Every structure is written in C-alpha cells, then in structure tokens.
Length: 352
Image (cartoon, rainbow, N blue to C red; front, side):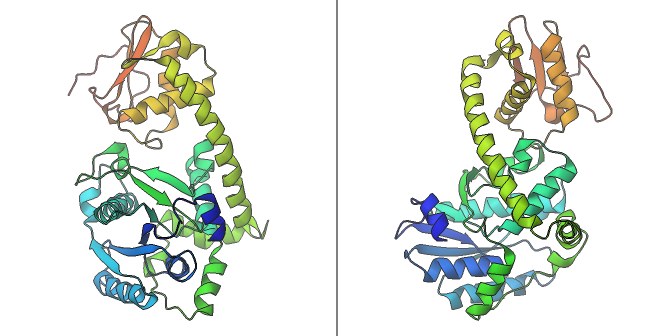
C-alpha cells in the first residue's frame, strides 16, 4: 500500500475520499482493512454490488455489509440487473462487469469520490494476461490491467453499447496489483478478519476460473513463480505500450483533418502504427478496443493501403470505412459486417 501511495500520491493523500469496491472476499477485505487502519487517514466508503445471479446473493450482501461495518467503514449495497446489460453475444461475465462498473461509477460520483479502488492482485493480473493470450492479443492485452486508469462504463458492453443509465468515466485504482493472493490471505488471518466466500469462484463454467484452477497450477510445474513472471511481464509491456501510445498520439494529431484522416500520411506509416491508428478511430466511434477481432481490421487495412476512391468496407457494429481521393473516414451509419462475409470493398450494403 505504501508503494502504491508513492506512485499515486494524489489518490492516497490524507483526507482523500475514495470508494472501495468491496466483495467481502480475501483480497477486498485485506485492502479495505489496510486502507482503514494504516496511515494516511482516508475518507472511505465501501460499495458492494449485488449482481443477483445467485439465490443467496441478497443474504451474502448483508454479510458483506456487516463485515465492512466491523472494519469501521460504511458500506452501500447496490443491486444491478445483469440481464439488462447483455448485448448480442455478450457473456454473463461481460454483462456483469459492465453493470458493476456502471454502479460503482454512479456511487463514486454521488459521493464525490476521487477514485474507485479495486482489489485486483498479481494473481488476477496473471490470469488476465493468460486469458488474453488464449483468446489472441497484441501488446495491449499483454499489458493486462493498469494500477491507475480511467474506465468509461459505457464502452464495457460489447460494441460500445450504451449503458442503461447515464454515467461518467471513473478513475480506477488497483493498489494490490503487485501483491499475491497468499499475502492477502495471510493478512486476513493475521488480523482475524472474516471472509465472505463467493461459491461461483470455484465453478469451471467460466473460462477465467478454469485458468485459475487448472491452467496456472499446470504452468507452475514448469515455473513455480509463473504468476509473478506474468505480472512482471505485464508491467514491462505496459511501459512499452505507454511509449508507443505517445507516438501514436502525435501521429494521430497530424493525420486528422476534421472528421477525416489524411490517406497519404496514413499509408506512409508502418503497418503496426496503422493498426493502432485504425483501432483509435474505431474507439472514437464508440467501439471498444477489444471488441473487433483481427480479421476485419486486417481487411480494412488492406483497403486503406490500395483502395480506390468511393470504396467502402463494413466493420462490425455498423462502422463503415469510406475511402476518398485524399482522405478516409469512419462513420457508424453502415450495417454491421456479417460474420461469414470476407472483403466487401465494392459491395453497397444498405444503410440502416
């Protein structure tokens, strides 16, 4: 916690109001207790999100609330409708994440919190990196989670679908990102803290749980320190990504011409930077950075490399890439690309 405070002095300055995401598990219990009882003195409020996915979730929420009070921190319980956040092929976990961060952002704003503090650990970081590798990823996926970032809950639903209620971006802080779960468990045992277990963490229905319960223990046979290695790898990659993003910022500024992009300057960039610039343009259209798979991105890059004026390409989520004589533009006025459709540069898809 002291290391996190040194890296984020504005967040952990005395008297700062913080909202602590509190599940009642060992990690968030350890974090809430440490924030409440170690200097500096902070103005803390806990928030527990009841996803309503288990029959006993309301009873569990009551136990979590009591645990926070025992630690000495007021807790607000928020129940969310996960089903209402499901979009197209979204998984329950994706919908729950969107609903959870929307609720936390709303509570943080209502109480004037500087940031939402979450208890992701080095183990969570290792799981995230492996999940991204299994699904296929670039540097951004290898960088995993950041200790300090701004999250826009409106972009967490697949395709950047709007959340059900208006919500502003929220600052998310992860002070335990370099701490392993054995440490948080030992901390709770040392101070005699109760833990509210979530039985869903042991089911192998969810991919992340299979990574935690099956894949990571198997990899430990090759390297007992695999969790620390993956977390450290994420840190190193994140530093490299920050350098690249600064470079992309400067290039993007020179490319933009109002709502369009300079085609000649774009074609002069290396393929790797073109890919990042195109994903940036998609993000500006409200599509999440990880929502579009590699194949349509590569098809669109081929069009931008050699396409003729007036040719178009239809990306997922209704984003249309339009090539002009000297510029190209993206708009969210087309029809979403069909999954079985390959290149559609000269196909006029009816607008919706």
